[in-house]
Image (cartoon, rainbow, N blue to C red):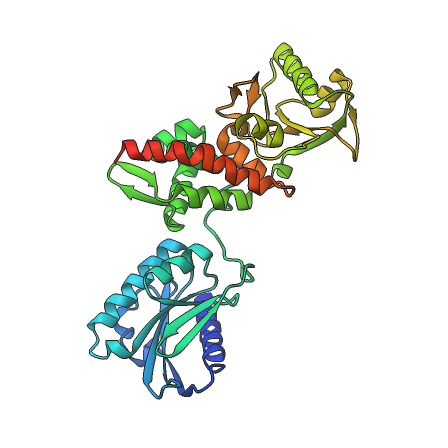
Length: 375
């Protein structure tokens, strides 16, 4: 059996099991689009789009038909297209007042679910996520874990190289980009830049026009990136050295300047200088683009498995140190606001609170100003 037929059968079974759990539902009949119905004439590529219709009597003794389009992928762009197609088909039917549209896929992400809600379309996936709201029926379930991992054309939008494009576009959400410009600025191949562009479109994070590519919802993109990223993904070395935080940070600054090594403070060392929120921090943190063991040795700092008061991080990609800057009360380097947000958001000890404070104080106002300039 082809993969798409197996998925369609699983979705039919999942729908049937769910709808039969509703008290008062009766006379349930499920038919594939191959047997007729309003969807039958609109099926195009079978491995991309299929469907079925379920007729039954609701608890209020009304006859309803649920029209379900099943997609091989639940990516937001495809879900939006499916919702629009379903609504157009239903609006042509004389029985439209008793027809309810539903899209079904292996996995419906939170963003795809929001699109369905906005368009008043139900949804269902194989992880258990669903929402139906019609007649006297209301069912809504949210499952955080994707139990059915989909094959994706790009390993991850937020892998080190691919995320360079995201970083650049988030730097100025008002700008419209050509793929060639993204490739050159991100220092990646045209091929990878094109794949990232397509992924952004598939996820409904960006829109394409004759002028190029532009982000639609930069806050959503940053949030999704923060869910995929952790500062712990970088090579790290915890050290102990006598002295206060500022004293040790100055030691690192002088050392890196002398050795011509790229570096920048991050986590609470940076946030306390850029957007102070958390007090009582006793450990400094910094990215250093060098051999961490050698740095610690040269500084006379002792690597320790616990009890560290300085965390050295080696950036997994050079763009982590893109757009570093100084702060008002310190001449050393600090990571960009975007990088600081990502690092803080992945820190369990009050990091997410500090990240949101940074976003509201620094990132959102800057984005608002840039987007306001473009109308």
